Length: 345
Image 1: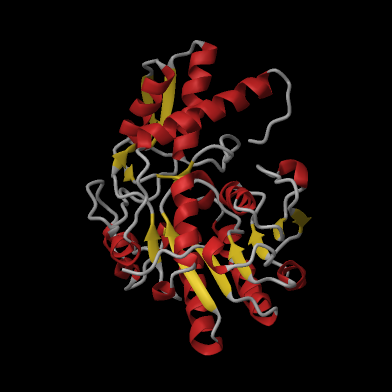
Image 2: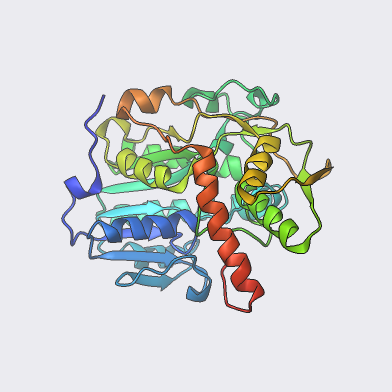
């Protein structure tokens, strides 16, 4: 088991940290995470206007740049000691199944960010990969065997988004093999929590279900539409566990250029996820099922054997507790938007 090193034990507080995709859910949370640890030179980058960022952290340099453009990546990486790339055009299953070309084009972001981080002399580079990189032939049953890191090959990733992630992983590995840039690769499994997308088509299942329960209670129409038959399964990781994992994986010498699962290993059906949201909301809803809606693979779970072996740690916040926190935040956003206050959905 490796030493559990983190940024605070390796970097100086004035070393520059660059976070791509900082206007998004995970990138915004990571920006706040490092700021709260006392780092004073953080550059947050996202292509969205600042008014659409989920979190803007005071004291952080926030730039609106499209990182699919190489010259914007050069500006973003100037002076960087560590670069965290969480920028991608993506969303929940409703987005990634309908906009595969947009998802594939995110390969430009990682290609340019890697090159410019290397040219800028960055010491370490983090890439946010996805469990969508895994072979889909292994995910056809809701009672799926948990996926090990080796299960990405032979390759048969999810169309669009999954193939982009798998190819970008390979580019990260070659930057270490050929150029000596220390890269870290984490395959995220369904990250959820406050300050994330909860409406508009890019939201993922936990947020979408919380919103639907809140809407049903507010309208008095006690029904909920579920995409698919509700039997499809996933594991869900709370944002705080994700941030802890990113930090440890980035600074572990045994994980350089080595893809690793970062997710919960507790398998949960969509029907059971709805039941959790109903308990939190104190309501029971009539369920209808849209069998034509995008659902992705039948089942997916994270095998955490490797991360426990290397780090002696794995995501652990219980789903019900994380859902309570997420539900409460989305409810605040919903009430605020209904009252005419500006919210980010």
